[in-house]
Image (cartoon, rainbow, N blue to C red; front, side, top):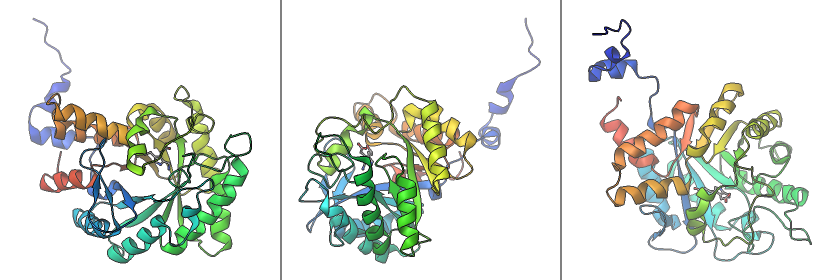
Length: 329
Ligand code: PBG
């Protein structure tokens, strides 16, 4: 009989020991809930490919945000679903556009209970579905788009958004937006840079959620899924341009990039568990193929373990409820 001297199993023998030896913990305050708000009044509209997630109206969003604050989550990230779209995404910079209207309403609703954040990108507002303005040859024009982002930043800041989520992947977007904010006196409006945002198939259900149809794909501006080092480069660039927080997106398939970025970053690093990651677990759970709650907890825990300080997840409120019902794990 071999008798091992070193027995790692020792620390796994009882729940109390496992709890004490746990390296990573989840807490509601580091969860952020992405929310979709559409125009019109009345009830929320379910999103087919994301069972359990809805397109809110401003009214239903008010109630949902109050509930989210009660659950103790750290913040919400707002996306607008406009009725009308055009080539330059006019709705994004209209103070009466849905995203800006919703921001004002929800900031008024929650006050300081959680951080109201907004998506700063044109794709929800353009008729071609791209994150920027197109040049005559049909490619996304980086520098013209920066002008639109600067205008968007000012309208969002004026609406009360405290943290602007720059998700468009244009070169120089952090510096451009930072400068515009500072010149207009919004020195305390913070910038969350989606630094390492990959051209991912896992954004599929999001198109449903914002009812956007994309002409072509986003590979000329979002990162190639093959590239790890480039994700770190983008994060370092954004830090040097003045980002307050950097993000890796999607999360689950990019944990290596997340670990790399978190090893070199001197500012908070967040990750976005995207619509496709949500849909996969919900679908498998609906078939009874995996344990829904355990899979959700494990997926978010893994993202934290890889180095994320906070996680954007569509399960934020439900997960926060579980965590407070059973505070240790
Ligand atoms: C861009 C944006 C997207 C997502 C968040 N911000 C779509 C895209 O880049 O294609 C996707 C989020 C998700 O899939 O949950 N405004």
